[in-house]
Length: 90
Image (cartoon, rainbow, N blue to C red):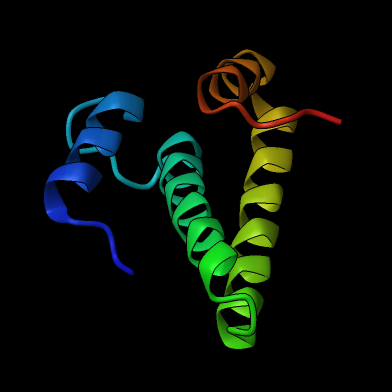
């Protein structure tokens, strides 16, 4: 299920570095985290939906790569975003 426009705009405004920023790693990680939580709830109900499970695994991998990039470039922003989103750190 896609995000509605209001929820997406709220997430972008919360994590954006400046006005009109939609591509920074922080924004992308926040949007992916929201989609991951929605898909997780969907899969709790529909346990045999294997195509959605594959999509979920791809989203988790993409978020993991973005987090790895952010950790190597700016550790302060990395630690801030994992604290705000409640993502576990290794």
